[in-house]
Image (cartoon, rainbow, N blue to C red; front, side):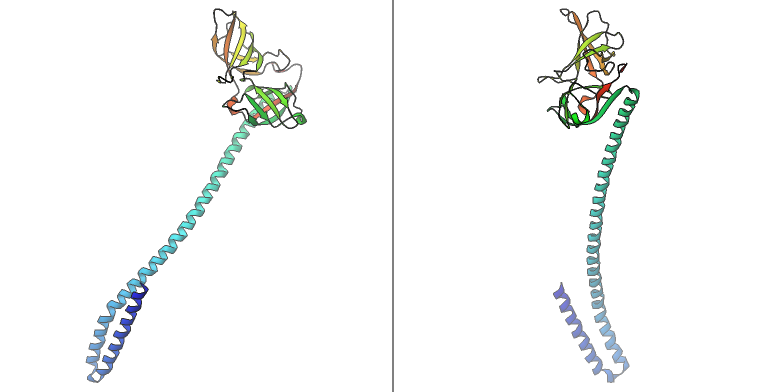
Length: 282
C-alpha cells in the first residue's frame, strides 16, 4: 500500500509539470487556450484527487475503528472484572445473612431456655462420609468444655462431647451407631433408648428408639425428648419425630424409627451446654 501511494504521487507531480509547461507554451495564444489547458488539467486531476481523498478517508476510518474497538475491549474487560467483584461481594453478603439467621435462631433458643449456660462453637471438621457422625468444634477446655457435655442447636439435640483439647473438642452425634440417649415419648411418656443407625455398613441418618413397652401406643408423628436419665443429657431436649413403628412378634418391646430434628448433614454452629439449673428444660 505505501508503494502504491508513492507511485501515485509521482504521477501527479509529472502531470502537474506537464500542465504548467503547456500553460506557459500556450499563454501567448490567449486566455481561451489557457482555459482549455486548465480545464484539461482539471479533468485529469479531479479523479485522482477524488481517489486520494477516498483512500485517505478509508485508511483514517480503518485505524480509527481499530482504536475504537481496542478501547471498547478494554472497557469490556474492566466491566467484566467489576461484575466478578460484585458477584463475590453478593455471595459474601448472602452468606453473612444466612449465618445471621442461624445465630438469631440460636439466640431465640437461649431466650426460651434461660436455665442453661452454653458456649457457642463452630463446626470445623467431621468424620469421612456424607454424615456428621462425629464432628470437631472450635472450643475446648479453655472455654469450659468437658467430656460428656450435651451439644445442641435451636432444632434439638446434636450429641455429646467425647474428647477435649485446649481449643477444640470432638462430638459424637446422635446418628452415630455408638451413640445412646435415653428418650421419652412426649405424648404418652413412654421411655426408651435411642441408638444411631449410622454404622460402617449402613448410613441413613436416623435413630432407633428401642425398648419401648410392648403395649405402647407410640405412633408416627410423636415427638421424642431426652428423658434426663443417665445424668448426661438434660431433660426435655427435643430429639426428633417418630416416622415408623416396628413390632416383631418375637420381641417383647416395640421399636420406633426417629428422624432427628437437627439437620446433622448441615451443621455449622452448635451450643455446648456447660451447666444447668436443677429445674432444667421441661
